[in-house]
Length: 109
Image (cartoon, rainbow, N blue to C red; front, side, top):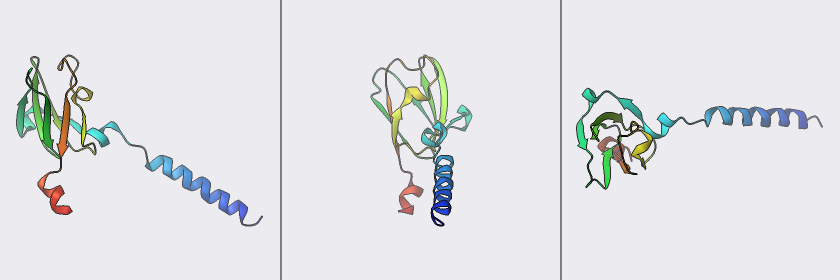
């Protein structure tokens, strides 16, 4: 019985710390909005665009349906629907963006 109470207390504290540290935000997964002027390149989305490929840490400016938006791809996701970050009305269909490791990421492995 003497061991039961400290063990239960330790398990409770461990569970509480896991719920605190395991919380991921959308920014952790996808990255962050950026100023278009900070973009390293511009991608024009038209009817022929089937998918988009970017590099991790890249800042990209998008032009679509007469709208402009920019994104810094610093998240953990390797692919996601661009509609998750595009302004309303910018895209008229699902469009997947693939995030490749950059040269620094590849050098770390």
